[in-house]
Amino acid sequence: MQAALDTLRHVFGYDAFRGEQGDIVHHVAGGGDALVLMPTGGGKSLCYQLPALLRQGTAIVVSPLIALMQDQVEALRQLGVRAAFLNSSLDAGTAQAVERDFASGALDLLYVAPERLLTPRFLSLLDEARIALFAIDEAHCVSQWGHDFRPEYRQLTLLHERWPEVPRIALTATADAPTRREIVERLALEDARQFVSSFDRPNITYTVVAKADSKRQLLDFLAEKRGQSGIVYCLSRRKVEQIAGDLAAKGVVALPYHAGLDAAVRAEHQRRFLREDGIVMVATIAFGMGIDKPDVRFVAHLDLPKSLEGYYQETGRAGRDGDPADAWMAYGLGDAVLLQKMIEESESGEERKRLERRKLDALIGYCESTGCRRQSLLAYFGEAHPGACGRCDNCIEPPRSWDGTVAAQKALSCVYRTGQRFGAAHVIDVLRGADTQKVRQFDHDRLSVYGVGEDLDAKQWRSVMRQLVAGGWLQVDVEGHGALRLTSTSADVLKGNATLTLRAEAERAPRTRRGRTPTTGEPATDLPSDAQARFESLRLWRASVAREQNVPAYVIFHDATLRQIALAEPSDLDALAHIQGVGATKLERYGRDVLDALATA
Ligand code: ADP
Ligand code: ZN
Image (cartoon, rainbow, N blue to C red; front, side, top):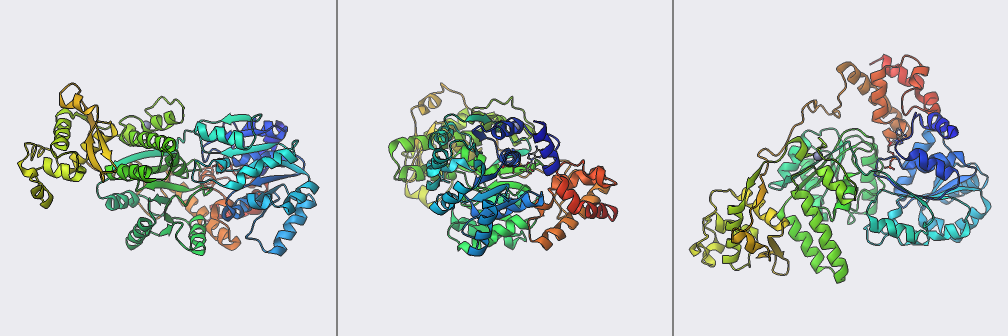
């Protein structure tokens, strides 16, 4: 174990393992198989990188995204680790050189795409080399239930059959039990030890706002994020283009990303997002898997994700470096109706549809929840959390609730009197006594419910409708174009046998947090001003080094490391060596420059 700690300090510059890392490293270095479930940002890479250094031979890392291998390998090289990758992006000459290095035992780690790994040529190469271990990253790609399904992953059992004595470690941030079972089965990991970490991401603040003018709401949210990197998720390609354009017009550096874009454009946008500071990626869920940029400061959802698993994965891309980050979502009834429609109209079998409906319900429940978001999110993954996290909208500003029984009665009877054939917008018009073409056409101004709801505004009614649907007192008839219908429990409310406590919408949508510096183009940190000046000087130095080497800035040093340096103000190399994230190689390469940058700040 001492050897592991020594290598952790010497190579990675860290003093201690995080969570289960130590046990995992020990187990795999000792030759055991492992299945590691750890949230994004939990520190999965170290779990195979360290055993790779402790064991004889080369570790083979199977990774599904070739576009990202280069940065992963670059980060290792910066640490002085002998790493390389093999994928279709390399020309023949370079690939051969990598293969030669591998065969001669000159590599600690070799990253390969699954399709390359499975070629007869590569398999015979493996026969000749000494293999330290197999790491299967993003192991949930074996699951056909997720959107990351990769058929080649299913053939990876071959590794176990051909090299039964080589330890395997499969890693994923996907927590749900069915996916976990599928990974075990498909990768033949029945005998592997499972390491399940807490899935809490304490540095992420969760916020859900009721959709009103979502573009405006997004801009308000982004106003306090100037200069920070983030991702804005939308459901459709068209909306991605539109929002990216709108943001750009407002001076935000925003780039679109979706499967309909030319591959070269996609690659370029991804490259810029990874390498430049402060880019906002507006994307469909086609973007994000394996993006290990540590300083993504926010993930915003303008449309509902497909499920809480999806939401958790997508928001998990924020704040991998452990610094504060935001997960923000705007949610409206229309989203829920649209997703429900997509489920009903899909070709899936009834069993699958039932599963998806349940997942959608859970997601809506999360959006509507008045309790601690972290608690309900973790509960969904089977993890208990005491609540009152202090880092979600409901904890920071507990929602007011009100007795919505009478409003609910009005809403339900309006749905009933208009014939259960209309969507929320028209029902609200009738309740509010609006004079619209549709109201006149159907003589709805003659109904007894016409105008009985003038005491609430349209926004409040939308909130009531949403909560009635979420609570199962109303259902959306997807075949009837989103018409609202009563359910078996509606009668209880109508007859006055049930009282309803509803959540009141927050009056002011954007919430500016205390202690945040105003937007200056630099990410907000809570450093004292002299340390802040040193931090900025270090960032400038880092940017120039990164440009020179054509690598992402974070592979030189993470923000967190620079911040510690700025605070500790080390006066010599020995003192600098004690900072977390400063290993021997980086100390040697950059130590002097860092001290200089400090001196000139
Ligand atoms: P994951 O792959 O699980 O999303 P990473 O392996 O990218 O997470 O690690 C997330 C961040 O945590 C990285 O910036 C990494 O350098 C840092 N990290 C990992 N292990 C430790 C540790 N033991 N001490 C300090 N920082 C760590
Ligand atoms: Zn909370």
